Length: 231
Image 1 (cartoon, rainbow, N blue to C red):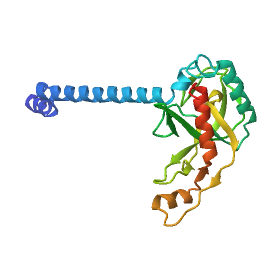
Image 2: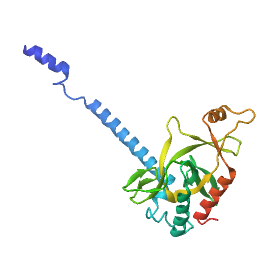
Image 3: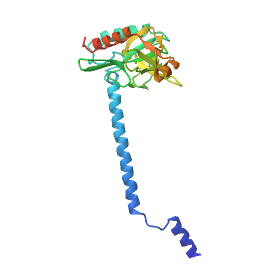
Image 4: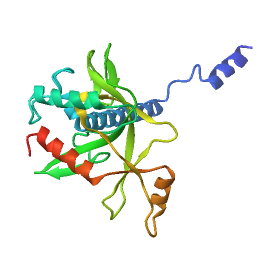
């Protein structure tokens, strides 16, 4: 019986000494995973800081963004307050996209990226009654916001038209601080296919792509210049 019991112990690994080489290999793999996680987190932090710098730098939720803008805090608050008051559910709007070249549209002026996003208003202006996480960091109690749906920009190679599509299958909802609003309440037309459309263009039209008027693009870039004191 003792021999049988000892055999079970050996076969189950109870009495076997730990494999030093195997432990070292596992330890090395864990260190590699930790390093990868650290690097990815660092990249994510940098991307968030770059994309949402205008919101993160704001001194308070009630006075608007910081002195990085050409306008005074009071003047900017007055302008964006008017935009937020005029915003109606269902309106399209453009908002500050900082220097996000990947997802935002806009222009490079004097070596500086001026980018914006397209959104659709889903709720009237409101003040937060408690801190709330958002795509622009943690928003403080009292921050003036509008609830909106984010639209994705889809580029058309060789064509200046700006097409946007909604997320599928569910809308991409965002809580937007009102001091980031640039333009509100303009018309958008459904995209139309031209001659010999690409497969991508046909897919976008099937998703009810909409077209941003060139005038709104120009007005948004001009407003970003004005806010940053570059006009």
